Image (cartoon, rainbow, N blue to C red):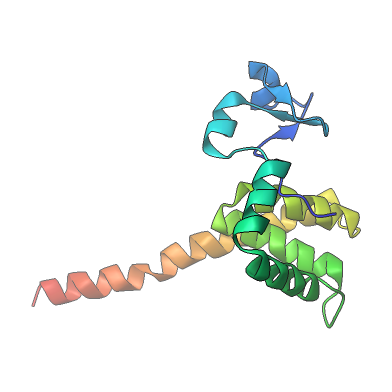
Amino acid sequence: MRRPWSVSERSGHGTHASRTGGRSDGNGWRVSTMDQSLYPQWNIEAARKRKELAPGPLAAFKAFSDAVFADGALPKKTKQLIAVAVAHVTQCPYCIHGHTSEALKSGATEEEIMEAIWVAAEMRAGAAYAHSMLAIETMKHSQD
């Protein structure tokens, strides 16, 4: 079962939430009050409301997601590692937690997950460097 996790960390590992008190979401995660104000915790009422407001698109998206993450030319584990990396680039906390959990369930190791995150970091940094060409071209033309 894929669940969009709230912004939180596993309790008891020196996390912000455990240092500041936080609270448990009932699933072994500690959620700090600050995090909740930015990213509300998943709840059944909100899930029901989303389904009520747009049942067709929700069903289509679920089918799409299931098809995308099914074993194919790439195994589920690889797809989940890609999703973890992309979630870090898009900075979606729900996606980070959900896809990290799914990657682990699919057999990914903690080392593989961290390596995927480093690939994402390099791509994000590399893109910033590559785009410096735009600034260089602008500077060159502004001197004309």
